[in-house]
Image (tube, rainbow, N blue to C red; front, side, top):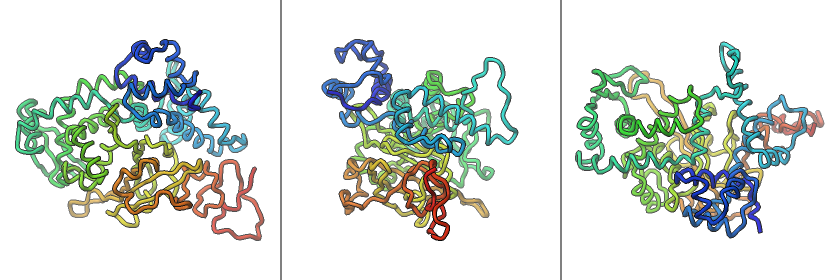
Length: 472
């Protein structure tokens, strides 16, 4: 009997790598051949139910979580890609694209990489750079996409960095009364860096001065942001070797190394301020009450949301969550998904997502039950934030943070209290993007569906022009 989940191989491979196991070592533990495990990891052999339970038991995860589709995000990204106007005459269906993603995931990722490059070149103000002999025509141009893919491939969990944070914890605790004092003392005693508040130019949060012996931190920062800046400095110094090793072992292109180091430094800073096991215990005790946890660890709403997505330690994991950050213009600046929901790669998300409605009530938690076109239901919360502005005439940034999970996990979050999770028709129908969304009746469409064109009866006036679209 097969699980019917041909995409399971990628998740097994990721869990194996997180444990630093070779294929031969894992195969021996599972009592199968290394060649059979290799075929499973490349989605060329199905996983039987007994083997699924053995693998789940070995890694300490739930079988249902292990069997979740690992190539679902690839399929969603490809649907978004093939929804572009240049493919309008091909009459590709979502079923065709899902089959392609399942049967040839490596080719699908290559196509996606090529499309990323085309899009990046289109946005380049000086036009595309000529390819030189030996250069890689598929090399990604957008560092942010390369780093986003890297985090997703590693389930946003890095045991090596967690180990650094746990190694530092006793030193910080002994160094001072409280985390802030401990960070300052640890930085000064171990690395010779003193933290000082300073008046810095607008937009500059901190700056190394005096030959690196002083970290000047802007006096306009919120207290939790200033604390995070200090933690990032400690992370940069104490975790330099581990961060460099992670980047070296990855497939991240060289132009994105700086951004990757920044992202991993932020990860380690969060692990320092919110240690794994105490933080997971706080999530379980408060049922993921973000504001309570933020007060407990003296961190911000956004920092807590990010840290919640990293709780993927085998045998000691949190809820599989997705996270989205967008600005008021709809530009998605951060995206990560373990919940299975697809977040657009290039275009804006569905306007029905509560991450946009949250801007109407800044500072408040906006709760939404949502249902994707494939009928999967999710429980999502969102909150709009304002950053900056702590000086006269300083510009402010308006952002919205979205966090969510599959409906099966919703009861574990305090925000689900009083919400009928099983109510028929109680979920808001949402999509990924207008071009690949099959909900033709949606009055909030910004584009027609990819396989439709504007037509229909000109004497009938619809709420939205694109609701008149008809099949090509």
